[in-house]
Image 1 (cartoon, one colour):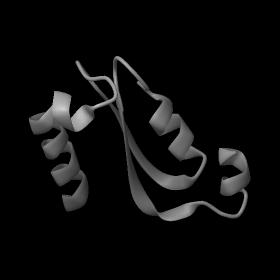
Image 2 (cartoon, one colour):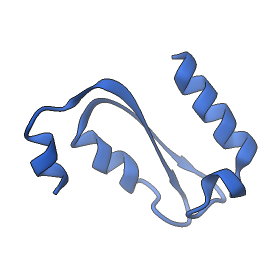
Image 3 (cartoon, rainbow, N blue to C red):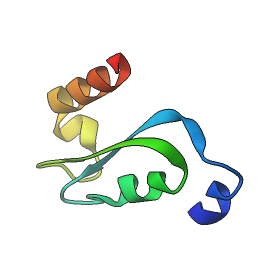
Image 4 (tube, rainbow, N blue to C red):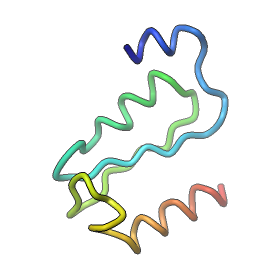
Length: 69
């Protein structure tokens, strides 16, 4: 399905893809690379599905850094 969406043209905006090491791991990054040309992908250690609850300070830092460019 991601390939079909990406066939229409990739997103031009930067995209942040984060996955918890104990859950999705690198999948969000791999999936988003099919849909966007500028993907920053990272795996969040000691986190599963609930990234903001399990690693709030690390997540806040990643999001702020991404938004600042």
